Amino acid sequence: MTAAFRMLAYGVPADYVDEYVRIGETTTIESLERFVRVVVSIYSNNYLRSPNVDDVARLLEVGEIRGFPGLLGSIDCMHWKWKNCPTAWKGMFFGHFHEPTMILEAVTSQDLWIWHAFFGLPGSHNDINVLERSSLFSELAHGRAPPANYSINGHNYTIGYYLANDIYP
Image 1 (tube, one colour):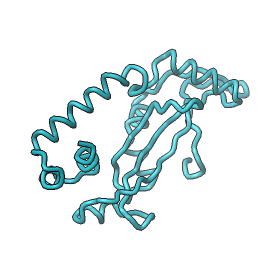
Image 2: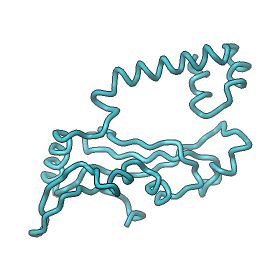
Image 3: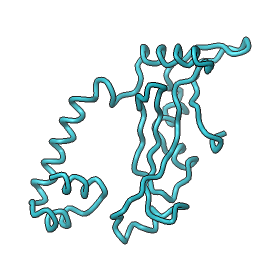
């Protein structure tokens, strides 16, 4: 089953999975859906969610202690090589790494709680294109950011920030 899950996760058409694994398309998809439901039911309360008010308070407190008042986490986009990218899609997923990749945008806290993940955009995008499509920044743009009240040099702020590398403004 793992080979079938991997193939479906990488976007391999289900009829190829049927020929490779010799399990019917319906059975493979049903098994994958059950697997995903179990993962979500086990991990959603602690990991597969946005931070709540208590989480934001904890993130801000840790950031303050570490010298970064208002910090909600570190953000980055990384390219994941897509070894078995279908030939028809290679042009769309072909980026500056000179091979097909998918992009993962993630926000993590200092204790490695990954509280935001946005995965699957083609590797032809750059980080700024990913941010423009990210639900995290869409919520921020619509004023639905986690409330974060802090002060730096006598200026009060109500929106937290993310530690990033030098590509982000």
